[in-house]
Image 1 (spheres, rainbow, N blue to C red):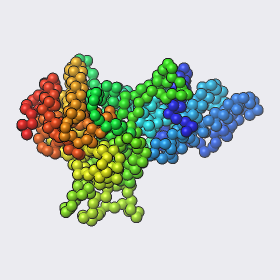
Image 2 (image 1 turned 30 degrees about the vertical axis):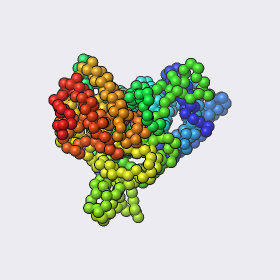
Image 3 (image 1 turned 120 degrees about the vertical axis):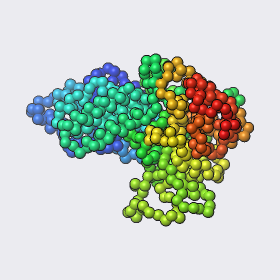
Length: 617
């Protein structure tokens, strides 16, 4: 392959140096990565440039060298736009086909960036290059990094996207746009803000997000005041969505200095409990994940629901700085890759149809390496069986909703069906049976998650399902639009514990003490699992992977907490698993219950938990 991740990394180092050394070179651009440029000229860039040069005076007065500079710049600009717009035609699934194309695109943008730096004065005088036009190049580089992150799941590329977007804002490259009577340029600016906000959300830079939202609000107000456009409602909806997204997470205020805790929930070096020497666990590793969001009315921004946002971070490591990795002493650019740690590859599917979901699932299954695990996370509205059935098969318990908007049969959407038929727009447990030929780890967060407890392991491969409660106590039901409590436990167990305990502020020292105590609980849960004599071996086969180990320990902490909490009194309030965990050795283990009561005592909320252990049930 002509281009690789290494080459992208080298490109990043070079461009970062250029960013530091040459101030008037960064801006932004508006068109979404997969959208065509609406305001592109129909005239070829070279011809257009020649017209500009001719209009400035006699064509013969322009030195040949300067004429060639403008022509070469136009060629690079044309080529970069052609490659950039071609990214939308790449297949959305599959991990191999797109890499060489991305590499070529990065390469052209590197040349274009260097060229405009080296010949800036000529381009200013002869081409009439404007500040925001240069910014388009930088903005597209930021977009390339963001979409490279989406393709690879390598969080370091988020940092690179952030560095470009941040430089654009700091240097005010769109400051002159508002003075021009061109609404399409203002839309470029608005879309830049929306994309920058997404990157900052993913990096948990909440202070920056709040500043950006305020600036975006002012820009939208000015835009709608100056231009009588039809997209005013849409832009106000963007503001509402991002505001709701920010407010969705529980807030913890530290009383010492009245600051809000901002935590990263990605896997840190010491995040997952370490395996004890001699622990016998499987050697499987998580390689691919499908994160699916189809909950009615759940808060979302940019086709990312709160649950999807939380789960994707639970499956990523903390970002590293690619430049510092590439510049480490002794590293050879041509031979060695950056010392980066692999994240599982992810597909983020917002309200997919059944056919879309199955297509991505089949692609992941096909490309899954040996000794690897495929994870499927389903956050979706429950679909329940409509009629009675004499059998109890994998299609008789319902499942979770898939989108019906684009599923068309014979030209018409199907709205009615025979009551004896199974729900068509539903992912049934039986739909996943073909994929159990390889190790499969399933998480279902739904009001009908229990349907996936009726699994059958047909092929003897490792298979585990973690299933959310199907209902929550009435006191918590109003919170469902802000994301699921079950997924919050898998993403940030301490914040979830504080939420069910009714706490929203504490001293910094107490916060740090609770974090340390929770790490101890995770270590003890790991020991409970690996020392259990009756646990199904599937759990242990997945336990060798850091991400899956952390999810399993958090799941057990979640289940044990809910079983001890006074308001979680019904069976449907508790998470379940397939295969079933030995409760007395895990979620109802007296040693673990004691830990939970001690954590509650540290927080002075012991009163919301049962005083005794499982005897109270």
